[in-house]
Image 1 (cartoon, rainbow, N blue to C red):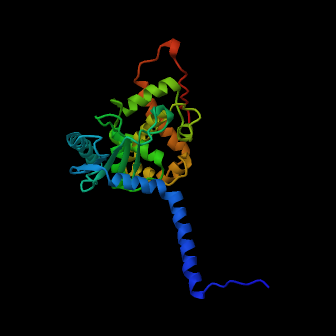
Image 2 (image 1 turned 180 degrees about the vertical axis):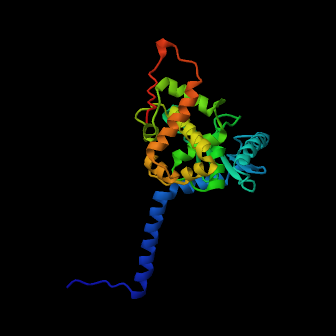
Image 3 (image 1 turned 180 degrees about the horizontal axis):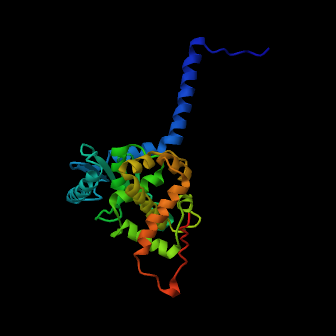
Length: 284
């Protein structure tokens, strides 16, 4: 005769709660473990603050003076960007984490950024005692303060470059014209493709994207740029962009052609041995 072991009725419920809690903890560690480790790591970092920045880095990675100078230098950038947005971020604070363990790409030609922006927090890799961070990172974080969460990360990045108003020291329209002179005119469908089949360089795509935002601003003003920034899309799409701006894809592409052609018309022709076909049909 087989004996049956019966657990006390009051013991089953606590045991069940224990197993459910353990399973939930395991799931949390599996999915959020990296986030929790990063949060703890950043909590233990040294920090300095300025009027609009909190700068963090691992203890000993930078001197206090170097961190304070970095914050001071960013304040000048913040003031210039915030003025363009009507001082919308004057009471806000951006958080910059300088981390030697940040997984930055070796080259930005990969299409990856040497930083990440999450709301008002910017993370970047600390490579030297003199920290470097592209100004577009601050612009993107400040756009979040002024306009909220973007509808798509790529559009947010292009809008941040437009807000800066320059590309590696050159005016955005002129820099974009040099790319189009080399590649031929890029229609919006090609520009917005992800990944871009006709634009091999992610840098060229980012520059042309920022130039397109500049064109939107010139024809429609800041409100039009804000509408495009907020438009939710799984990937950049000329159809979604046109709907957000209350126009048609054909008209959107026509204005882009006209705006780009105005820059190209004022540029010297490329040498004949290196010339690329302009591919600029204007009869639409």
